[in-house]
Image 1 (cartoon, rainbow, N blue to C red):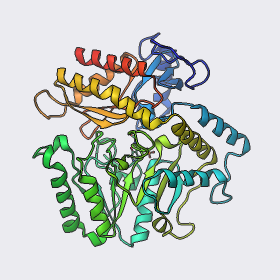
Image 2 (cartoon, rainbow, N blue to C red):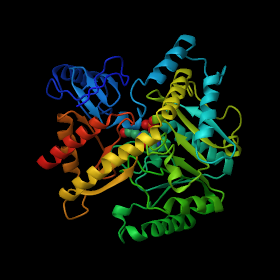
Image 3 (cartoon, protein in one colour):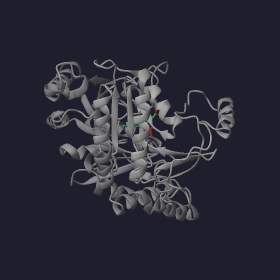
Length: 452
Ligand code: PLZ
């Protein structure tokens, strides 16, 4: 095992898995007792360990355990934790000023991030951006902009879609428990239509794209009216819904329908963007050029920053003062984003993501052959997943998924679950993770599956 140090996370952080206590260890248990007393229970935690340091492909807890990170803080630390360029640029900014409010006196970093977004997002048309703090806030603003631009109200979203936890984005999100249950009433003028989910399409995957697109369009036309529809909002690779890759042909057909009817096509790339799938944006896979695109997560190496980027004429629709927020595009977060983007270019993290797929997918497929609990292996780049079912059926096996995750956690592998039926295990390693750690993580998964 190589134990190269210093893929950030501070000097001398060994790139190795090491368990020195049970998971959780005593210090984590002590902190967890304090958390339970002081933090609202609605804010859950996947693993009961408290973080101390993280970098490269590992996360070290307060007891000195070093975990292999297959989660990246939910697809955020793609460049690694405390990546050198992120720390360098954000630190320099911290010494200059921490906040002026971009709406009061702007600063260059904000503009530079918007210039980068114009360059990196799909399409060579004139583009503009606005910056925010969280993914949900970006989605809310994309909806505001689309409504203003079209003078229409209806927003079309899809089965298994996830767009956030604020009031409007709860309405846009499809899964009730835990995201919406008890939190209504929800925002009006949101309409949900089918998505091409090949594994669960009743007539089979072959006709899925065509049939799902026809159903979705028919529902929009009949139930909403194309002329009333401001925007169609979709994740080109659905994240919280279960890492669903819409069957090929579905996205282009929906985008074409939007174009024909003057509907703003919004791609939510908050989870799938910024090299995660082996391309700058997952939309590129089928040559989709969204009118608006929402980004966050991987963009700023762990600092809170989000954006809406899109066609200049749409972005400029709203009046001056109509968009904004006190902290949106915070200067330290902008500096971090510029550092993260620099790292993505320098280390060619798109190639790294594709390499991660090359290593992981064949091994996951092999596991699926010997473990019928794995119904499907899917995803692209470093956004991969297995869907767990009761063997021989497509019935979601939520219990097996939770048990498998727990078993991996006990062995020092941080994995996350996802999916409408909570039966998908997803793999989102930092793109800078070492190949030895990837293999070791997969060994742990294999052992846990075999014992399951
Ligand atoms: N759109 C596609 O994936 C955030 C949320 C996890 P925020 N996904 C992880 C959880 O349980 O809260 C997400 C996303 C897509 C929007 C969002 C929302 O981004 O930064 O969490 O608001």
